[in-house]
Image (cartoon, rainbow over the protein chains, first blue to last red):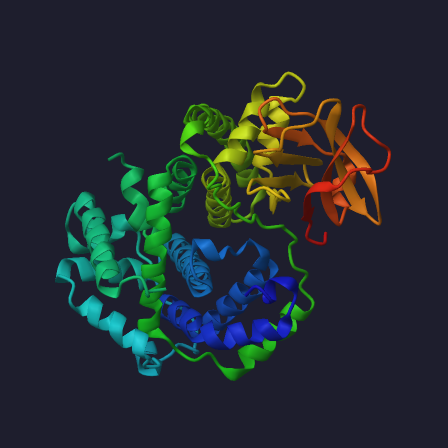
Length: 175
Length: 282
């Protein structure tokens, strides 16, 4: 990334190769639409290139930076699509013939992925569901509370406890 | 725990509404506990993405690389944290206490300046979340400037009370988006100095601690060096520390040097350099 921040396109290509499956994966899982996921992934990498000098390695890894940016954009897009369809009084559904049958079928198994999945599986169910609804489905904490029919405070606590537990299990290496 | 405070983890998993996220981002600027928590938790949230990794179609790579080839990069210099000064000995503890209180003063002024900057940024940025990221990273840079360089920053703080330099100007230097710090060592002593500069604010300052005692009738003179050295400011020091505002030539200079010169200074350096630091190319 240091090289990429000085305009090294080849270094950036390497960065893309090393990080794009996580970026594309999270975007696809939130959006559930292949062509939109491609669009957002492209936006993320162009934006990250443009702002490369803002990346500060003391603030976390480059993959965390990219994943955060990607997740945020995907969630923003899902929510604005939801608002649009709500205005039109239609049930939310992407109008695309390009929908992946189930993104889960395409998942690339990596060692880290397995490790994180194990850690997720060990969370108490309430905590795991809260994190999954928020992170993978882009729901707000209020929506998660409604969905699970628990008070908002409980959702906040579950998300916090889940993240702290994951941190303990994944240790410092998680990024 | 306040309402906003409790949103740290929710923000990381993207569970805040746009307006909650905005409130939280404002809160983040002034709450270092949350800032730290968020930084930590982001790494965990990011790790969640590894459970759903999917290879993007091969054409996307070409399309990304083609786009970046004609996308200019935003130019921002990054802060290099100064080395923590190890030279404050026990017998200088009273000075250290003074430094601590000055540091607190600097932090307050910097926070005020920073708040103003963040508000302005919020208006400019098309994406509020992006503004939050910038604010977070700037906040961390500022924090690293304030903590990693305690002695130097204390000297900056002492400038806040000096009559000849405007407080607001210095605070604005510390909080400039492009503030850059380059540290160097004084020759023949373990003490350090640093050049803090911001092109955006058109201000460059030399911060020195533990200066050797000046011989009678001599002064320190700073030089901006690009080819021939040009005078950049004369200073003395009562207590071996000094903060000196450098001339604008510092922005083009290859290095900044300090020599000991006869009172009144010299047009060209005549003494040996006691300090010399190379600046990164502009």
